[in-house]
Amino acid sequence: MLKFVGRRVLWLIPVMLGAIFIVFAINAIDPGDPVSALLGGSYTQEQYDDKKIELGLDKPFIVRYAGYVKDIVTDGDFGTSYTTKRPVSTELVERFGVTFKVAVISILIAIVLGLPFGIISAVKQYSIADNAVTIISLVFASMPGFWLALMLMLAFALNIKIFPASGIEGWKSWVLPCLASGLSFIATITRMTRSSMLDVVRQDYIRTARAKGLDERTVIVKHGVRNALIPIITTIGFQFGILVSGSVIVETIFSLPGLGTLMMTAINNRDYPVIEGCVIIMAALICVINLLVDLVYGFVDPQIMEQMKGSKKARRARHKTMGAHAL
Amino acid sequence: MSGDIKTSDSPAGDEPKRGMMETERRIDDTRRRSQMLSIWKRLCRNKLSIIGMIIFLILVLAAIFAKQIAPYDYSAQDLTNALAMPSAEHWMGTDDFGRDILSRVIYGGRISLLVALLGIIISLVAGGLIGVISGYYSGTLDGILMRIMDVIMAIPGFLLAVCVSAALGSGVLNTAIAIAIAGIPGYARLMRALVMSIRGNEYVEAARVCGQSGFRIMIREIVPNTLSPIIVDTTLRIGAYILMISSLSFIGLGVQPPEAEWGSMLSAGRQYIRSFWPIVTFPGLAIMATLFGLNLFGDGLRDALDPRLKK
Image (cartoon, rainbow over all chains, first blue to last red; front, top):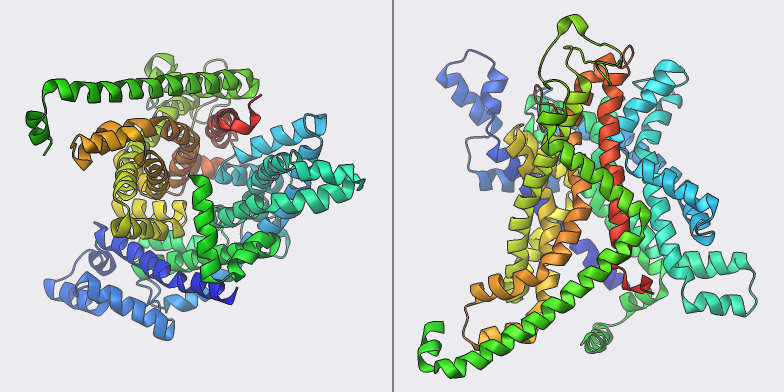
């Protein structure tokens, strides 16, 4: 188990190095020139060269990349913002909370509502409740987040004035952003739960459980849901990535001071250190969530746990037999 | 190499071998065709998926014949009639420049589909190539390529698209490239898995024995056999691509005004949200209808492909 976790954590290092490299490379090919953008309209060649050296843009790409990674690893230094002149790490820390809060609340709402809807829908397949849940979740799953955000704002902030349309003023300001990012997420979890449960309730062991006289509740919750969880957890992990990257849109609409708005402002100003910082933090967050998802598998499914615990030799043997089956 | 074998072998000795391969391939073809036919039949039995397909087909036709269907020119301005509510002349009203919203929504579908199609072609060619090479040669090269794909997958697709789009600038081709890069790892993995399952088949072995080069085997023997799963996967992807395009355009990247694009129409209309609802409603409904249709169709397709549901 520890070995598995260790290997899984170590794997994060090349992934993050690669992610930083990609973002760095994308910014390097940007045809826009931050030096002239910062200096404004008129400047001499000398001023231009000085500024370029000050920003460190005169050095070759690989040197800049290595220095950047070194600074992050040794002092958590993501460079200095071109526009605000403040350390990027301070800005990231300030903004992170808002994005994280919206993401976590949305996920919790989605799990609390999505799971029961999906289970009911699967257990009472083809009933009126099932059809209603299926159609409604399909509608919400098809709604683009930014449009849903606009419609919610139109309905509940402008026509019926219950919630504020922008900014943060108490708990009410969180309702619309969380709904906007959470509703389609509820729909996705409902749909996944339904199809996963439908797979499970057709299995023999469910029939066995019923045959030995267990009450329906135990059959569904203990034997059904537990076995249906793996694909649902995968979906949750996957959706978390969509949610975090979607913050760029939702935060812009509701003008929340999170990572998303920070990144959008940075993109408009060609503020590379900030863009890189935002993407790296979001990617890191998603990597950690995926790691947690992988570990949760182990707790949900004893078979996987066994595999994690097993020695390398045992695992190899198992792979071999599995290979033989495949042939 | 292949030339050597052909000259040394008598044509008579070469023919049966090739004949056998032909027959085998033909048997395989019929098997695949009948499989496709049964999938199609199962798909047709599912009414919802047919509805989804019809919705999507209508949108495709509207996009192709936008010029004939749209009641007005999508860029014709009529400032005296700006922000007009829906009426008999303008079914969805007019925007802040007095342009007919319905016509712009129809043309918006054309842009979305065009960019999505371009994006799919780019990511399919690039991802497919990586997948074929990775799956066919396996070993170290496969390991390196797949680790690179893993790294790209660690960054959420939309975030990657935002970065690429910000770096390249807006426009049809740049947006297509931005969404395509995010889609490459998915295609590469699928293609690799398909190639690995096909690689061991007798007809590939036979082609190798005949002395065909690796490249020729990949193109002539392997790639054609991966097509049907690739087509299914692509169908399921179109919706995600269209959503990504409109999201990019909405935040000021992607395809920008004066071009009519659903996302950029919504972002341009945002300032009128208090006073004039049609401008933020109809483009969004168009996106929703497209995704709804594609989701229904995709669900049906997935069910039809699931062998466990076979009766």
